[in-house]
Each structure stands twice: as C-alpha cells, then as structure tokens.
Amino acid sequence: MKNHLWTSIAALLVVAGGADRAVAQVSQKKSLDLDGARKIMSAAVAEAKRQKAGGAIAIVDDGGHLLLFERLDGTFAASARISIGKAKTAAMFKLPTRRFEETIGKGRTAMVSLEDFTPLQGGVPIEHDGQVLGAIGVSGAASAAADEEIALAGVEAVKGFVAGASTRTALEPVTHIEGRAVSAAFRKGAPLLEVESYKIHASRRDAAGQAEIHCRDTDVIHVLEGSATFVTGGTIVGGTTVATDEIRGESIRDGEVRRIVKGDVVVVPSGVPHWFKEVPEPITYYVVKVTAPPGGKQ
Image 1 (cartoon, helix red, strand yellow):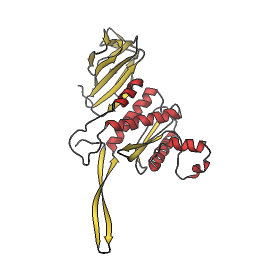
Image 2 (cartoon, rainbow, N blue to C red; image 1 turned 180 degrees about the horizontal axis):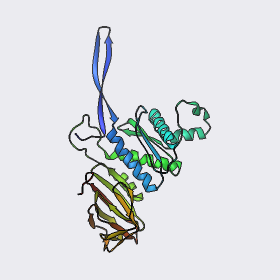
Image 3 (tube, rainbow, N blue to C red; image 1 turned 60 degrees about the horizontal axis):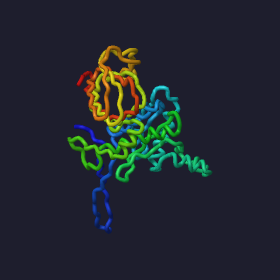
Image 4 (cartoon, rainbow, N blue to C red; image 1 turned 90 degrees about the horizontal axis):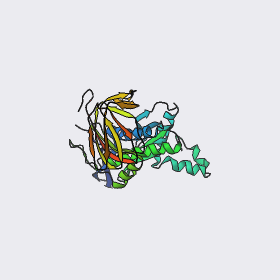
C-alpha cells in the first residue's frame, strides 16, 4: 500500500452528561507520518544543496519527538543538537523560533530561562488546515537566514501533498501547488515536488552549468522563457560522482549541440550526458524527472 502524507487518528471523547450517562463522539486529528517527513526533508535538503549552504535538518511530530534527521557533509557536529532543539521549540510553541530570538533581542531575556527551549532562528512549524502537525529545524547553514530559508522550503513542500483525507487509501494523492508558490520557485529555481518515483522542478539558469548525468532520472524539460545552447550525448569530461546516481563534469566532448528556446520540449533519457553550455539570457524551464527503481533504467 502506498503511503500518504496525512494519517488520521481517531480519538474517543467521553462527555459526561450526568452521573449515570456519558456520550461518546469521534474527533479527527491529522498527524505527520514518516513518509510525509521524508518528502519535507527531501525539499529542505534540495534547497540546502541549491544554496551550497550545508546544514543539519531535523523534523519532529507535534509532540516534539524526532521523526527524521539529516546532517549534510561539512556541517559542524553541534548543529545536530541545535536543529532538533529548534524543531522541538517550534512544534511545542506552534511558532517560528525567529519570533523568540527577536523577542529576546528586544530585552525580554527572562525567556532564556525556559526549560528545553532553543530561541534561535531556523525552526518553523509544519501546519495544515490550522493544525500544527510538527516542525522542522535547521542549523549550521551559511547563516541564520539560510537556516530559516531551508526550513521554509521544507514547509512549502507540504502544500504540494494530499490534504484532508480521513483514511489511508490505495490511491495516489492529488497535488495542487498554488500559482504564487510556483512563481516564487521559478524566481530562484527550486523543487516543487519530490517523491520516490518522480520529481518536478521549477528551474532557472542565468549562466552555463556543469555537465550532468542522471543514472536513474529521465528529464522531461519544457522551456518557458529564454534560450540556451544545450549539448547532449557524447562523453562527459572530468566526470565525478557527486551523489548517489548523479555525476557532474566540466563539459561534454563530441555531443550533439542544439539551441533550445521558449516552447521547446527536450527529453533526456537516464544515463545520457547533458549540459547547458551557453545561457545568453536567463532561462526558466520545468523539469519532470521520472525516476527508475534502484538498479533499473527508464
């Protein structure tokens, strides 16, 4: 059975109507499950890598209990404890931790005496339909602002997931990403949705990039604005494995050169080298990445 972001917990409430009678009713409470936490983590990690900011990322449930944690390479060790503290503080108080840092900075220093409290920017509640389902905390990125930006990228991913299902079903969720969120993603180039079998990126380039090979992802590229010289095939030069199933290099030798412009669609099968060699003007484009199972190809 496929996982969904939201699970429903039925809580039985007994209401005393007198000494000899009680009325029971069922209340629905949404919660964050591990599959949902993984999707949020994926979006946050992608933003951290996009910024080349590093960071330790923690996701907790609404009780402040750790669900998922990841520390990117090069991030200082103490960031692990701090990120968990930020997430727990945001979940328990149902507020971004930036609020507390600002309040203390304005002179309310007595707040620092609160037990198990991390009033540092970078913790953000994860909400849906007015309920706090948990929180994400980030520490050790390039700056306090970057900590919060990475956390917000994870929270933003929640908007792309199914909302409101009261029970698990075998059906895939319907994804609706609001236009303003899409526009914001294109302004900086960011993932819109990443799940196990596919990814959707709102991509932007202002300059040439590295040559790439995705060993499992087939890229479907739709150009919205701008143009570029795009090279495919051939042999990657100086190729290095930078992540699982991902290779980067300096350039491509003996590849096919083409100019891509607004309206074009390009499909790059998994395993095929590709390279934005020249970008004379900013180019924005959707990328749908269809991911083959481990050990397989599309």
